[in-house]
Image (cartoon, rainbow, N blue to C red; front, side):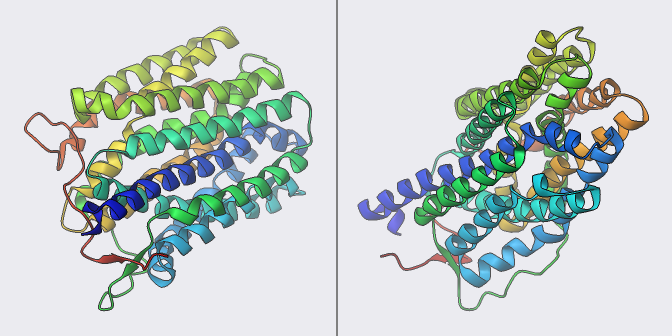
Length: 410
């Protein structure tokens, strides 16, 4: 196989850099949007329940569109599909701030979620394939690059919010810049095409049972991530009375904590194994959640959000890695876990808003704390398919996928 030749190895290394850049661009879209949610809320005079309703629509859009990602890849090839889906996701960043009212915001967020979900499935599938061809774990690092992108995006949003910049200008410019960067990044990702005899994937298929179990672990972590990323700024504003700049900075701290933990994740997992790493992370995230709901001021609340980020950071990369080794149909398992975890991230903001509308934001983050604690209980599911007898994780030793072939290069 060309993965063992000099030229093939160089191409795979280049593909690793490219897919890492794609993860960063995807994260930057999320980071920019999250910091301007308070602006959109204030601009449209939305209450917690109305904002929570609007934030349910990305989940609806994603649920409808994510099963189509496989068919898009089959039709156009992995590289062209990712390039188009990522461009659509970046462009959708501009839509929510342009909405004149709640119905338009719901429609914009449905499109936002659909584009995000399809791009997320495509890039994670290519990330797992790149890991397989390299023969060593890279998924935690790739998700670390997503967090770096989210950090950069939230930092830009923090500056824009602190300066009082109209979010329509901020998000419109960010959408244009990120669309260009995404197109460049996609130029060197793996270009996989289906074999001639391969049928297109179904529009909808139930994930295998193994993906459901693994996805349940990811659900808990991603719920905490989605809730913290999209509600932390609002929490600081409404619960601790912080100003717009400090509230936006809380999102930056959360993203920074996740990025740091994910870059260290591959080393930690090799030493302690996925189960122990996730159990320890669950304890840490639970402690952070307790700090958030009991903090009397902004400083301790921000610290709590940072601990939540540290604790949940490695769970999703490990869930994708476990899914890839959980059965005879890795792509179906990956898609199943992606659907569960990604839908969780989109359900979380809506659920937080609905609970806050009925009770309080503090009570909402009590639920986040409970789900973080569940990670310690359910972590054993990630032992599925692990190499060795100690539960330690590692990529399967495979140089390619029997159902796909590289497209001609050059």
